[in-house]
Amino acid sequence: MLSRQALLRPARVINTQVRGYAAAAASSKVKPPVALFGLDGTYATALYTAAVKTNALEPTAKGITGLGNLLAKDAKLASILETPTLSAADKSAIVAELQKSAGASGETVKNFLATLAENNRLGLLPGVVSKFGELMSAARGEVEMVVTSAQPLDNKTLNRLESAVAKSSYVGKDKKLKVTNKVNSEIIGGLVVEIGDRTIDLSVSAKLAKMNKLLNDAL
Image (cartoon, rainbow, N blue to C red; front, side, top):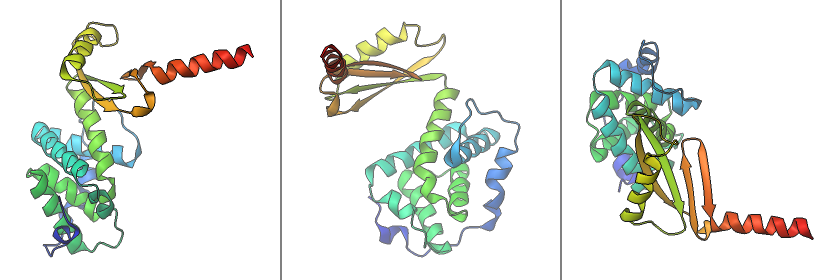
């Protein structure tokens, strides 16, 4: 876990040559697989474009995944990144520590992190990581299926769901299904399946809500 002391130890000031990184990447003719919105989407698109231009897409994706895992493990890290009073030396130390801890040693990721730091946008990192994941999924032809259950599902159940949905019209031709299981005790039981922009609500809570509505309408 990263400590504030480790992140803020003295280090070299960020090189000002990275200032035009995002603008240069955005001006490229590389077309991202999907359009993203918001400031985090803009940075994610710039990172994707820069990675394609430098033939470093997969190493960059690996580094960004490492950063995402780091953020997930350290609950305090996001708040440290959002600190508005960080000095240039602080931000340079943070960039170095993030790279080291996440195993993100590539130049593209290094320049990207330095750009975020110089523009006082390190707080956007969690959102950029998520948006970059969307770009990579689209580039790989993946269709994300999020299965929400009241309790964690075992691999056998997830594999059965994946096999069934992969053969359906919900997944386009030559597309790969990427399955994620989320746990939400509020659904009580059953499942909520989200595939792209479609939602199939088979939860107990939804059934109870429908039953309550029917009862209220009848009274």
